[in-house]
Image (cartoon, rainbow, N blue to C red; front, side, top):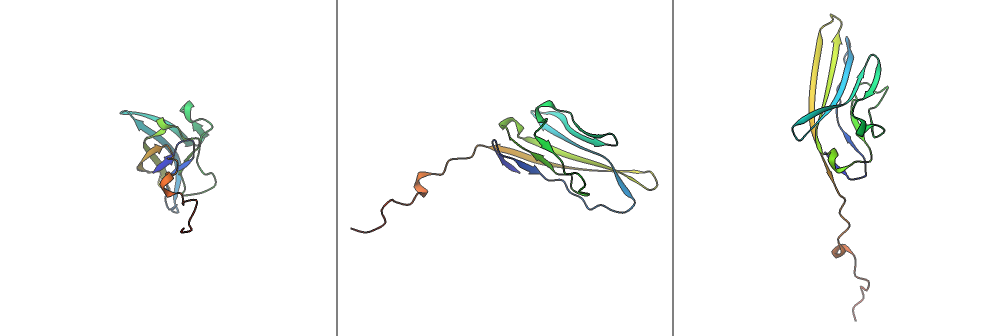
Length: 126
Protein backbone atom coordinates (compact mmCIF):
# COMPACT_ATOMS: atom_id res chain seq x y z
CA UNK A 1 0.00 0.00 0.00
CA UNK A 2 1.26 3.49 -0.80
CA UNK A 3 0.16 6.56 1.11
CA UNK A 4 0.86 10.21 0.52
CA UNK A 5 2.63 12.26 3.18
CA UNK A 6 0.07 14.26 5.21
CA UNK A 7 -2.73 12.30 3.53
CA UNK A 8 -4.53 9.19 4.72
CA UNK A 9 -4.49 5.56 3.71
CA UNK A 10 -6.19 2.29 4.63
CA UNK A 11 -4.12 -0.80 5.40
CA UNK A 12 -6.52 -3.62 4.47
CA UNK A 13 -7.54 -6.50 6.72
CA UNK A 14 -10.85 -8.20 5.99
CA UNK A 15 -12.42 -11.58 6.58
CA UNK A 16 -15.75 -13.31 6.08
CA UNK A 17 -17.50 -13.69 9.45
CA UNK A 18 -18.71 -17.25 10.02
CA UNK A 19 -21.34 -18.60 12.34
CA UNK A 20 -20.02 -20.13 15.53
CA UNK A 21 -16.93 -17.91 15.65
CA UNK A 22 -16.70 -14.70 17.66
CA UNK A 23 -13.88 -12.21 17.35
CA UNK A 24 -11.88 -12.28 20.59
CA UNK A 25 -9.07 -9.89 19.88
CA UNK A 26 -7.87 -7.80 17.00
CA UNK A 27 -4.44 -6.24 17.03
CA UNK A 28 -2.31 -4.21 14.66
CA UNK A 29 1.45 -3.99 14.97
CA UNK A 30 4.13 -2.29 12.90
CA UNK A 31 7.65 -3.47 12.17
CA UNK A 32 10.21 -0.83 11.38
CA UNK A 33 13.99 -1.00 11.61
CA UNK A 34 13.63 -4.61 12.85
CA UNK A 35 11.63 -3.65 15.94
CA UNK A 36 7.95 -4.53 16.30
CA UNK A 37 5.46 -2.37 18.22
CA UNK A 38 1.77 -2.93 18.82
CA UNK A 39 -0.29 0.04 17.63
CA UNK A 40 -3.84 -1.02 18.38
CA UNK A 41 -5.70 -3.71 20.27
CA UNK A 42 -9.42 -4.41 20.43
CA UNK A 43 -10.64 -6.86 23.06
CA UNK A 44 -13.49 -7.37 25.55
CA UNK A 45 -12.54 -4.16 27.34
CA UNK A 46 -12.66 -1.97 24.23
CA UNK A 47 -10.27 -0.31 21.81
CA UNK A 48 -6.78 0.61 22.94
CA UNK A 49 -4.22 2.65 21.03
CA UNK A 50 -0.90 1.60 22.49
CA UNK A 51 1.56 3.73 20.52
CA UNK A 52 1.23 7.38 21.41
CA UNK A 53 2.44 8.60 18.02
CA UNK A 54 -0.64 7.01 16.44
CA UNK A 55 -3.17 8.45 18.91
CA UNK A 56 -5.81 10.50 17.14
CA UNK A 57 -4.54 9.30 13.76
CA UNK A 58 -5.70 5.69 13.51
CA UNK A 59 -9.13 4.12 13.47
CA UNK A 60 -10.70 0.76 12.72
CA UNK A 61 -14.32 0.36 11.61
CA UNK A 62 -16.79 -0.38 14.39
CA UNK A 63 -20.01 -2.31 13.84
CA UNK A 64 -18.53 -3.63 10.63
CA UNK A 65 -18.03 -7.39 11.01
CA UNK A 66 -15.25 -8.71 8.86
CA UNK A 67 -13.58 -5.36 8.33
CA UNK A 68 -10.55 -4.85 10.55
CA UNK A 69 -8.75 -2.46 8.20
CA UNK A 70 -6.56 0.24 9.71
CA UNK A 71 -7.15 3.83 8.61
CA UNK A 72 -4.12 6.06 9.22
CA UNK A 73 -4.54 9.81 8.82
CA UNK A 74 -1.99 12.64 8.64
CA UNK A 75 0.63 10.21 7.37
CA UNK A 76 4.21 10.89 8.38
CA UNK A 77 7.29 9.59 6.58
CA UNK A 78 8.27 7.36 9.55
CA UNK A 79 4.88 5.59 9.28
CA UNK A 80 6.39 3.50 6.47
CA UNK A 81 6.87 -0.11 7.55
CA UNK A 82 5.32 -3.57 7.70
CA UNK A 83 1.87 -3.59 9.30
CA UNK A 84 0.49 -6.83 10.70
CA UNK A 85 -3.17 -7.45 11.44
CA UNK A 86 -3.87 -10.34 13.80
CA UNK A 87 -7.39 -11.56 14.50
CA UNK A 88 -8.21 -14.26 17.05
CA UNK A 89 -11.62 -15.93 17.09
CA UNK A 90 -13.17 -18.23 19.64
CA UNK A 91 -15.33 -21.06 18.34
CA UNK A 92 -18.38 -22.58 20.02
CA UNK A 93 -16.21 -25.41 21.44
CA UNK A 94 -13.89 -22.75 22.97
CA UNK A 95 -10.98 -23.39 20.63
CA UNK A 96 -9.08 -20.39 19.31
CA UNK A 97 -8.22 -19.64 15.70
CA UNK A 98 -5.65 -17.03 14.71
CA UNK A 99 -5.11 -15.41 11.32
CA UNK A 100 -2.35 -12.96 10.51
CA UNK A 101 -1.83 -10.78 7.45
CA UNK A 102 1.07 -8.37 6.84
CA UNK A 103 0.99 -5.40 4.47
CA UNK A 104 3.85 -3.06 3.63
CA UNK A 105 3.07 0.65 3.76
CA UNK A 106 5.25 3.12 1.92
CA UNK A 107 4.68 6.81 2.58
CA UNK A 108 5.71 9.05 -0.31
CA UNK A 109 5.82 12.78 -0.82
CA UNK A 110 3.41 13.84 -3.52
CA UNK A 111 5.45 15.07 -6.46
CA UNK A 112 4.25 18.39 -7.87
CA UNK A 113 2.94 18.00 -11.42
CA UNK A 114 5.73 18.23 -13.94
CA UNK A 115 5.74 21.40 -16.03
CA UNK A 116 6.11 19.30 -19.16
CA UNK A 117 2.48 18.20 -18.76
CA UNK A 118 1.16 21.74 -18.94
CA UNK A 119 -0.44 22.68 -22.23
CA UNK A 120 1.34 25.41 -24.14
CA UNK A 121 -0.30 28.75 -23.56
CA UNK A 122 -0.78 29.26 -27.26
CA UNK A 123 -2.05 26.44 -29.45
CA UNK A 124 -2.64 28.38 -32.66
CA UNK A 125 -0.16 28.23 -35.51
CA UNK A 126 1.31 31.47 -36.80
